Length: 513
Image (cartoon, rainbow, N blue to C red; front, side, top):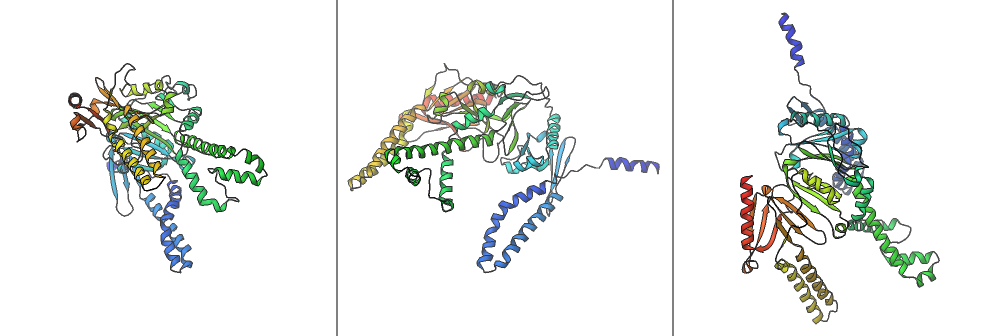
């Protein structure tokens, strides 16, 4: 009897401590009702068209109420358990799902906070297991306390043996002075962006897309303005000035209207570039952990993700024709781990000098070719496609002019311009082979350099066609896992013997690895 009574407390103590999501999850569910209500608008419109306007508001109220009830039941039926070496998640209102994830299978624990989540002190926690290629298949906890999220990440890292090294001196150049000094318990800071750096980056991030959005907004809301005014149209600047008694001055200085319109374009383009850069990269920090590079950034949506070093497949340096003259570059890493559903490659240095990028490359055992490294160029035949398009444009313009259409001259001029740009761009396709890596350059308006380790290449395809074959040329296409499917790496139009020798070396290095 005594033994049985003593056993009861032991059994009760062994009961698992299940946890629920933060109650603020329901507040987030209310916020999500806005977009969902838009999907319900066709049904409301159908009710109105049927002449049942009296039922529109009750139907909308019923929809909102049912949505809130479903969200409450989903919250009530969701629970998770953090064990000694695994996390267990149970979910589902009608069909229950029980999922067990061992800590050893978790590649990373990402923490994301939207604007409302930051105000409520909660965060979304995602577990990347590498079990599927789609980020939607990864396990996640939609809303738990920020402290609990950080503690959970620390627990998983400790189980994997990721001890935290002492902090080292930051290597982020001019921003090192402005970055917050890391305590001895934090990871080593590699790169940080100060507000000043964000402003400079935004000025170089001139956005033409914002101009289109503003123009569309003016067309949509022009009836609400007290006057018909388009900041992009010099004629409107002229008309507006006349209304304020400046007719004579404007007649003598018509160029002012054009300058005003141009300044408006520049202001909106630069302002939107700065705004997007600040929203995306505010508080940017890249730190080195024992097994990963951790990136934290964002103003409205704060993200905290890690990129396991051993999963990096390639490094991509991107710049622009103007950025390059000021030594500004962007570093992206192609990895087996995705950076969200939209961005396929990890942006680890949004805007930095090569002297700041080199230490980051050193952490993943990739280096840039030396300045003295010789580069091989692709054959100019790669311009054949562009030249064919230029020929078609010129032919169309010529035919139009023969038919008495003076505007056909535009086609001829466009053809000549396309041909010139194509021939000029063909000069910027080059490559070089290093002992353990191949580097590929392309582009002049937006130059891109891909640093591809031999060990990351899964396959090498040698392609030729009716144009390349008679010239003894071939194109090498590298199969590299991870990253964007549209970002395939290739070396076009090189001598066939050179392509075969390079393919043999790369595949041999892959076999040794």
